[in-house]
Amino acid sequence: MSTYIIENANWLKDTKLTQTSFLIEDGRVSSIRDSFRYYRYMKMDISPFLMTPGHVFCDLEVPGGSDDFASIKNYYLNELINTGCTTVLTAFSIKYEYEFLKELKNRKATMINCPLDYTIGLRISDNLITPNIIRSCKRHRVPVIWIEMDDAGKFKDIPWGWIKGLLYDYPITFVPFFTTNIDIKTKMKHLKIWQQSMENEGIPHIPHEIPLKVPLELNILKKIGIYPLRGNFLVGGEISYNLYMKPGDTGTEPLSFHYDQLVLKCTMNKGKYQYVNSRGHFYPGAGEELIIQTPGYFT
Image (cartoon, rainbow, N blue to C red; front, side, top):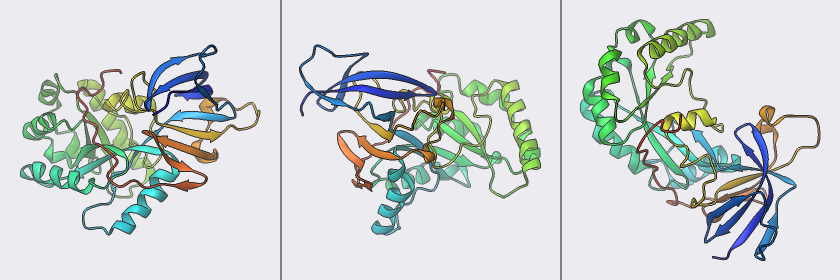
Protein backbone atom coordinates (compact mmCIF):
# COMPACT_ATOMS: atom_id res chain seq x y z
CA MET A 1 0.00 0.00 0.00
CA SER A 2 1.14 3.55 -0.67
CA THR A 3 2.33 6.13 1.81
CA TYR A 4 0.24 9.27 2.07
CA ILE A 5 -0.63 12.10 4.43
CA ILE A 6 -4.00 13.03 5.88
CA GLU A 7 -3.61 16.73 6.57
CA ASN A 8 -5.63 19.45 8.27
CA ALA A 9 -7.80 16.91 10.08
CA ASN A 10 -10.30 18.49 12.47
CA TRP A 11 -9.96 15.67 14.99
CA LEU A 12 -12.81 15.50 17.47
CA LYS A 13 -10.93 13.92 20.38
CA ASP A 14 -13.41 13.16 23.17
CA THR A 15 -14.98 16.64 23.48
CA LYS A 16 -12.07 18.71 22.16
CA LEU A 17 -11.43 19.75 18.59
CA THR A 18 -7.80 19.81 17.46
CA GLN A 19 -6.22 20.15 14.01
CA THR A 20 -3.82 17.31 13.26
CA SER A 21 -2.06 15.59 10.38
CA PHE A 22 -1.36 11.87 10.00
CA LEU A 23 1.36 10.06 8.08
CA ILE A 24 -0.08 6.75 6.85
CA GLU A 25 2.14 3.86 5.76
CA ASP A 26 0.81 0.45 4.74
CA GLY A 27 -2.60 1.19 6.24
CA ARG A 28 -1.23 2.17 9.65
CA VAL A 29 -0.59 5.45 11.41
CA SER A 30 3.15 6.02 11.16
CA SER A 31 3.24 9.46 12.76
CA ILE A 32 0.92 12.15 14.16
CA ARG A 33 2.01 15.79 13.99
CA ASP A 34 0.61 19.27 13.58
CA SER A 35 1.96 19.32 10.02
CA PHE A 36 4.07 17.40 7.50
CA ARG A 37 4.77 20.50 5.44
CA TYR A 38 8.05 19.38 3.88
CA TYR A 39 7.04 15.82 3.08
CA ARG A 40 6.43 15.04 -0.59
CA TYR A 41 3.97 12.19 -0.26
CA MET A 42 0.46 12.47 -1.66
CA LYS A 43 -1.63 14.62 0.65
CA MET A 44 -5.34 14.37 1.38
CA ASP A 45 -6.77 17.62 2.74
CA ILE A 46 -9.84 16.87 4.88
CA SER A 47 -10.28 20.32 6.42
CA PRO A 48 -13.97 20.53 5.32
CA PHE A 49 -14.80 17.58 7.59
CA LEU A 50 -14.89 16.55 11.22
CA MET A 51 -12.77 13.46 11.80
CA THR A 52 -13.32 10.92 14.58
CA PRO A 53 -11.90 7.48 15.32
CA GLY A 54 -14.27 4.69 14.30
CA HIS A 55 -17.10 4.51 16.82
CA VAL A 56 -17.55 1.77 19.40
CA PHE A 57 -21.21 0.82 19.93
CA CYS A 58 -22.77 -1.37 22.60
CA ASP A 59 -25.28 -3.84 21.15
CA LEU A 60 -26.18 -6.78 23.37
CA GLU A 61 -28.37 -8.45 20.75
CA VAL A 62 -26.11 -8.64 17.69
CA PRO A 63 -27.65 -11.37 15.48
CA GLY A 64 -25.94 -14.49 14.25
CA GLY A 65 -26.08 -18.24 14.49
CA SER A 66 -29.42 -19.46 13.13
CA ASP A 67 -30.35 -16.08 11.62
CA ASP A 68 -30.29 -16.01 7.83
CA PHE A 69 -27.40 -14.24 6.14
CA ALA A 70 -29.53 -11.55 4.48
CA SER A 71 -31.10 -10.44 7.76
CA ILE A 72 -27.70 -10.41 9.49
CA LYS A 73 -26.26 -8.27 6.70
CA ASN A 74 -29.17 -5.82 6.78
CA TYR A 75 -28.95 -5.56 10.56
CA TYR A 76 -25.26 -4.67 10.52
CA LEU A 77 -25.72 -2.18 7.71
CA ASN A 78 -28.78 -0.40 9.11
CA GLU A 79 -27.99 -0.48 12.82
CA LEU A 80 -24.20 -0.19 12.94
CA ILE A 81 -22.23 0.35 9.74
CA ASN A 82 -24.32 3.21 8.33
CA THR A 83 -23.80 5.17 11.55
CA GLY A 84 -20.00 4.94 11.70
CA CYS A 85 -19.58 1.96 14.03
CA THR A 86 -16.35 -0.02 13.52
CA THR A 87 -16.28 -1.94 16.83
CA VAL A 88 -19.14 -3.49 18.80
CA LEU A 89 -19.37 -4.39 22.48
CA THR A 90 -21.76 -7.31 22.95
CA ALA A 91 -22.52 -10.03 25.50
CA PHE A 92 -23.63 -13.57 26.19
CA SER A 93 -26.05 -14.71 28.91
CA ILE A 94 -26.24 -17.69 31.25
CA LYS A 95 -28.77 -19.00 33.75
CA TYR A 96 -26.44 -21.43 35.55
CA GLU A 97 -22.71 -21.47 36.32
CA TYR A 98 -22.02 -24.60 34.28
CA GLU A 99 -23.27 -22.89 31.11
CA PHE A 100 -20.44 -20.34 31.05
CA LEU A 101 -18.00 -21.95 28.63
CA LYS A 102 -20.71 -23.36 26.37
CA GLU A 103 -22.53 -20.04 25.99
CA LEU A 104 -19.30 -18.09 25.53
CA LYS A 105 -18.32 -20.43 22.69
CA ASN A 106 -21.81 -20.12 21.21
CA ARG A 107 -21.57 -16.33 21.27
CA LYS A 108 -18.19 -16.38 19.57
CA ALA A 109 -19.61 -18.69 16.92
CA THR A 110 -22.40 -16.20 16.17
CA MET A 111 -19.75 -13.55 15.50
CA ILE A 112 -18.01 -15.54 12.78
CA ASN A 113 -19.49 -13.38 9.99
CA CYS A 114 -19.16 -10.13 11.94
CA PRO A 115 -17.73 -7.36 9.73
CA LEU A 116 -16.71 -5.32 12.80
CA ASP A 117 -14.21 -5.90 15.55
CA TYR A 118 -15.89 -6.92 18.79
CA THR A 119 -15.51 -7.50 22.52
CA ILE A 120 -17.71 -9.92 24.47
CA GLY A 121 -18.98 -9.40 28.00
CA LEU A 122 -21.30 -11.40 30.27
CA ARG A 123 -24.91 -10.57 31.22
CA ILE A 124 -26.28 -12.32 34.32
CA SER A 125 -28.69 -12.05 37.24
CA ASP A 126 -27.36 -11.00 40.64
CA ASN A 127 -27.50 -14.53 42.12
CA LEU A 128 -24.77 -15.64 39.68
CA ILE A 129 -22.12 -13.28 41.08
CA THR A 130 -20.06 -16.16 42.48
CA PRO A 131 -16.32 -16.87 42.83
CA ASN A 132 -16.49 -19.42 39.99
CA ILE A 133 -18.08 -16.93 37.59
CA ILE A 134 -15.51 -14.25 38.42
CA ARG A 135 -12.65 -16.71 37.96
CA SER A 136 -14.11 -17.87 34.63
CA CYS A 137 -14.34 -14.29 33.41
CA LYS A 138 -10.72 -13.67 34.37
CA ARG A 139 -9.53 -16.91 32.74
CA HIS A 140 -11.32 -16.19 29.46
CA ARG A 141 -10.67 -12.44 29.45
CA VAL A 142 -14.28 -11.29 29.78
CA PRO A 143 -13.75 -7.63 30.79
CA VAL A 144 -17.29 -6.52 31.63
CA ILE A 145 -20.28 -8.01 33.49
CA TRP A 146 -23.82 -6.66 33.24
CA ILE A 147 -25.84 -7.33 36.41
CA GLU A 148 -29.63 -7.40 36.46
CA MET A 149 -30.89 -4.64 38.76
CA ASP A 150 -34.65 -5.18 38.65
CA ASP A 151 -34.63 -6.21 42.34
CA ALA A 152 -32.23 -3.98 44.26
CA GLY A 153 -33.00 -5.87 47.49
CA LYS A 154 -31.24 -9.01 46.25
CA PHE A 155 -28.36 -6.96 44.91
CA LYS A 156 -27.55 -5.59 48.36
CA ASP A 157 -26.95 -9.13 49.64
CA ILE A 158 -23.99 -9.78 47.32
CA PRO A 159 -20.74 -10.08 49.34
CA TRP A 160 -18.75 -7.53 47.36
CA GLY A 161 -15.80 -7.69 49.76
CA TRP A 162 -14.54 -11.04 48.51
CA ILE A 163 -15.35 -10.13 44.91
CA LYS A 164 -12.99 -7.17 45.14
CA GLY A 165 -10.25 -9.54 46.29
CA LEU A 166 -10.68 -11.64 43.16
CA LEU A 167 -10.38 -8.59 40.90
CA TYR A 168 -6.89 -7.52 41.95
CA ASP A 169 -5.15 -8.77 38.77
CA TYR A 170 -8.04 -8.38 36.31
CA PRO A 171 -10.38 -5.52 37.32
CA ILE A 172 -13.60 -6.52 35.58
CA THR A 173 -16.04 -3.63 35.12
CA PHE A 174 -19.62 -4.10 36.37
CA VAL A 175 -22.59 -2.48 34.63
CA PRO A 176 -26.25 -2.31 35.72
CA PHE A 177 -29.09 -3.31 33.40
CA PHE A 178 -32.85 -3.66 33.69
CA THR A 179 -34.90 -6.43 32.08
CA THR A 180 -38.30 -4.81 32.61
CA ASN A 181 -39.69 -1.37 31.87
CA ILE A 182 -39.76 -0.05 35.42
CA ASP A 183 -40.72 3.56 36.05
CA ILE A 184 -38.05 6.26 36.11
CA LYS A 185 -38.39 6.93 39.84
CA THR A 186 -37.80 3.27 40.76
CA LYS A 187 -34.94 2.96 38.28
CA MET A 188 -33.20 6.03 39.74
CA LYS A 189 -33.63 4.59 43.22
CA HIS A 190 -32.04 1.30 42.17
CA LEU A 191 -29.19 3.09 40.39
CA LYS A 192 -28.48 5.10 43.53
CA ILE A 193 -28.18 1.85 45.51
CA TRP A 194 -25.90 0.52 42.76
CA GLN A 195 -23.61 3.55 42.80
CA GLN A 196 -23.33 3.70 46.57
CA SER A 197 -22.58 -0.02 46.87
CA MET A 198 -19.95 0.01 44.13
CA GLU A 199 -18.23 3.13 45.44
CA ASN A 200 -18.24 1.95 49.05
CA GLU A 201 -16.67 -1.38 48.09
CA GLY A 202 -14.24 0.11 45.55
CA ILE A 203 -15.53 -2.07 42.68
CA PRO A 204 -14.81 -1.00 39.05
CA HIS A 205 -18.16 -0.01 37.61
CA ILE A 206 -20.19 2.18 35.28
CA PRO A 207 -22.63 4.25 37.37
CA HIS A 208 -25.48 3.96 34.85
CA GLU A 209 -26.72 1.75 32.03
CA ILE A 210 -24.50 1.72 28.96
CA PRO A 211 -26.46 3.34 26.11
CA LEU A 212 -27.13 1.11 23.12
CA LYS A 213 -26.22 1.76 19.48
CA VAL A 214 -24.61 5.16 20.05
CA PRO A 215 -20.91 6.08 20.15
CA LEU A 216 -19.61 5.17 23.60
CA GLU A 217 -17.93 7.89 25.62
CA LEU A 218 -14.20 7.75 26.23
CA ASN A 219 -14.57 7.14 29.98
CA ILE A 220 -16.58 3.95 29.30
CA LEU A 221 -14.04 2.70 26.76
CA LYS A 222 -11.22 3.32 29.23
CA LYS A 223 -13.01 1.62 32.10
CA ILE A 224 -13.67 -1.56 30.10
CA GLY A 225 -10.23 -1.52 28.47
CA ILE A 226 -11.34 -1.05 24.86
CA TYR A 227 -9.38 2.21 24.85
CA PRO A 228 -6.66 2.61 23.61
CA LEU A 229 -7.20 -0.40 21.32
CA ARG A 230 -10.16 1.46 19.83
CA GLY A 231 -11.63 4.94 20.18
CA ASN A 232 -8.31 6.60 19.50
CA PHE A 233 -5.63 7.17 16.85
CA LEU A 234 -2.37 5.48 17.85
CA VAL A 235 1.01 5.45 16.14
CA GLY A 236 1.37 1.92 14.79
CA GLY A 237 -2.38 1.33 14.82
CA GLU A 238 -4.59 0.59 11.82
CA ILE A 239 -6.19 3.67 10.30
CA SER A 240 -9.93 3.63 10.99
CA TYR A 241 -11.92 6.85 11.01
CA ASN A 242 -15.19 8.63 10.28
CA LEU A 243 -15.57 11.84 8.32
CA TYR A 244 -18.59 14.05 9.00
CA MET A 245 -19.59 17.21 7.22
CA LYS A 246 -18.32 20.07 9.33
CA PRO A 247 -21.25 22.12 10.64
CA GLY A 248 -21.36 25.83 9.91
CA ASP A 249 -20.01 28.40 12.33
CA THR A 250 -22.93 28.47 14.73
CA GLY A 251 -20.98 28.90 17.93
CA THR A 252 -21.52 25.23 18.78
CA GLU A 253 -18.84 23.74 20.98
CA PRO A 254 -17.59 20.20 20.28
CA LEU A 255 -18.97 19.11 23.64
CA SER A 256 -22.50 19.65 22.36
CA PHE A 257 -22.10 17.84 19.01
CA HIS A 258 -24.58 15.02 18.50
CA TYR A 259 -23.53 12.49 15.90
CA ASP A 260 -27.10 11.82 14.86
CA GLN A 261 -27.32 15.48 13.83
CA LEU A 262 -24.14 15.33 11.72
CA VAL A 263 -23.93 14.00 8.17
CA LEU A 264 -21.64 10.98 7.87
CA LYS A 265 -19.75 11.08 4.58
CA CYS A 266 -17.15 8.34 4.94
CA THR A 267 -16.01 5.52 7.22
CA MET A 268 -12.60 3.99 6.57
CA ASN A 269 -12.00 0.81 8.54
CA LYS A 270 -8.68 -1.03 8.41
CA GLY A 271 -7.87 0.13 4.89
CA LYS A 272 -11.32 -0.40 3.37
CA TYR A 273 -14.21 1.96 2.74
CA GLN A 274 -16.92 0.77 5.11
CA TYR A 275 -19.24 3.66 4.27
CA VAL A 276 -18.92 6.06 1.34
CA ASN A 277 -21.25 7.81 -1.13
CA SER A 278 -24.22 7.25 1.19
CA ARG A 279 -23.74 3.49 1.06
CA GLY A 280 -22.49 1.00 3.62
CA HIS A 281 -20.33 -1.97 2.68
CA PHE A 282 -20.58 -5.34 4.42
CA TYR A 283 -17.41 -7.45 4.63
CA PRO A 284 -18.42 -10.75 6.27
CA GLY A 285 -15.87 -12.15 8.69
CA ALA A 286 -13.61 -9.07 8.55
CA GLY A 287 -14.05 -8.41 12.27
CA GLU A 288 -11.72 -9.75 14.96
CA GLU A 289 -12.23 -10.24 18.68
CA LEU A 290 -10.46 -7.66 20.83
CA ILE A 291 -8.90 -9.47 23.78
CA ILE A 292 -8.77 -7.08 26.75
CA GLN A 293 -5.63 -7.94 28.72
CA THR A 294 -6.01 -5.27 31.42
CA PRO A 295 -9.40 -3.55 31.91
CA GLY A 296 -9.28 0.00 33.21
CA TYR A 297 -5.52 0.43 32.78
CA PHE A 298 -5.87 4.01 31.49
CA THR A 299 -8.54 5.23 33.95
